[in-house]
Length: 98
Image (cartoon, rainbow, N blue to C red; front, top):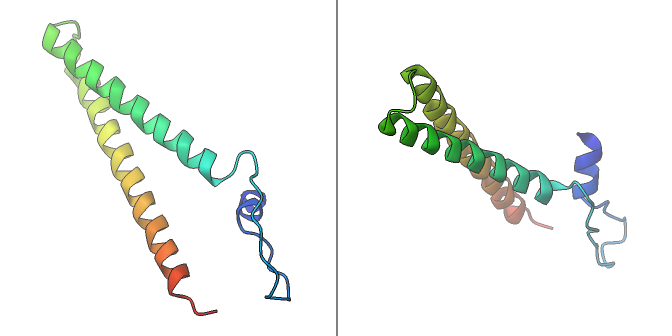
């Protein structure tokens, strides 16, 4: 985890007149966020398919559909909270005075 953070946050030099460059690292924050969104989308699609199968009479166990729906709900809520925390962190960084 620390190595991922070190790859995201550039090291600041003592001379502030130099421009700080951020290098693109494989497996960085963008990739993690993209993977998380893909997983949430897959869970949502699975829940939708389970619901359609229930309506079509293909599913015998209602509890499996309810579990899939709740898992989709929970994963989406977690993703929204992650976005909110990332936005709050960004806003806090923008408020910092240099």
